[in-house]
Image (cartoon, rainbow, N blue to C red; front, side, top):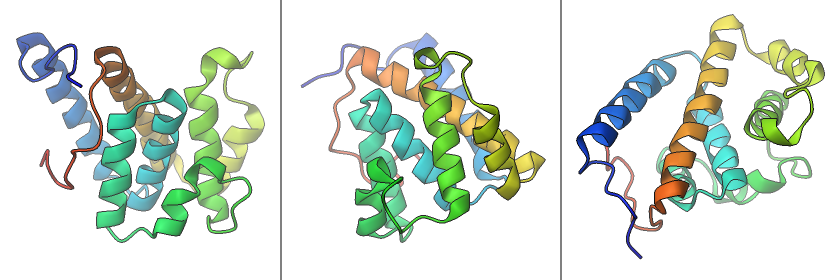
Length: 157
């Protein structure tokens, strides 16, 4: 399977990806826990059907020490006992933020208030930015049908 477009072979796409990566750097340098960042990226990617990002972020999380049990249960986080209350709040915000078109009113006040119990304003800004950014990456990869499975941790820097 080949992608419809090489995002690094197009000058426009390469510039956009460069800005996406710069935006992600601000998030990774924030105090939002790296584990939370990866869990949110994985869950949004699962919802969006982005195999490339799901592959990348599960491998990056495993490489950083995340357990296979937790990685295998991200899609079923509500029923799983392996996530903290803070992680659950972030996953709920990620799901609602990813499924905006599916829900009248978008993200609920309850989901926001629950996340605000665990994350300060800067962490919330990083969390919202991470959700928005991974959704943008997912859409690019799904549209161009970027193949999944070959990613190696650290491959992009």
